[in-house]
Image 1 (spheres, rainbow, N blue to C red):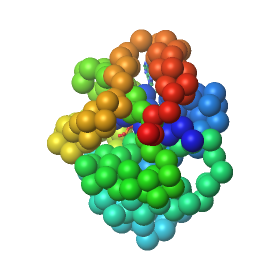
Image 2 (image 1 turned 120 degrees about the vertical axis):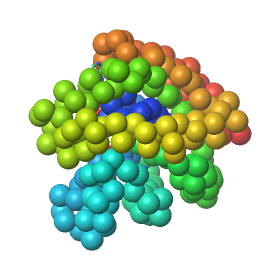
Image 3 (image 1 turned 90 degrees about the horizontal axis):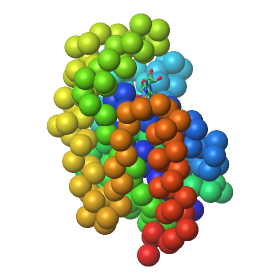
Image 4 (image 1 turned 45 degrees about the vertical axis):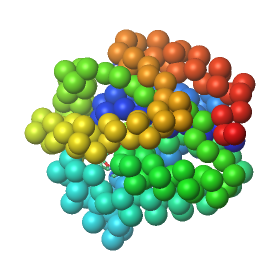
Length: 197
Ligand code: AP5
Ligand code: MG
């Protein structure tokens, strides 16, 4: 298996690049944001609970997203690997993910971290907010709340993987194709070695 985390702040291009990466490498895309939005659109109890946090730009409680990831891992036993997008987002989620993967005799191979300036992130999300219909893009205050939440709880998740030398920083500004090429260079290099020893 080859398991990668595509990491970065809101608007850094995780979703955009994930779509291209899963097409190239046949990985299973697990985006907790997409899973939560699907729960919301189906009006499930989990979705209705999660919506209260998401609409304000706050993280959903750990146990909710960890449960969703656990179910998703079990539901896809025969994939070439997983691409985690928007997960893990807290130290607790990172530890849980390591444990869940260890139970399956695998691990995270790499965390590819997209770096984008705050100014560019806000510009992208405000622009998308005009068309996306995503409630958390609907005004700049909520966008800024998401960025604050990222700095408070999520940015340090990279330290967890840095301890194992598994973080590769990739500049996430430029054309989508340029960024994709930088990501695939790293993945192609790492796929040749066993990173889960
Ligand atoms: P989530 O859905 O994960 O959203 P996010 O991390 O806030 O980020 P986005 O999806 O908005 O951005 P992205 O990095 O995917 O960028 P994208 O490719 O879309 O989470 C939403 C909420 O769910 C959270 O706030 C939280 O409440 C909850 N949640 C989710 N996971 C959770 C977890 N693990 N724990 C707790 N709560 C959780 O690109 C953004 C825009 O930029 C697009 O319009 C795109 O077209 C454009 N763009 C992309 N690349 C470029 C480029 N190179 N140049 C110019 N524009 C570009
Ligand atoms: Mg996304």
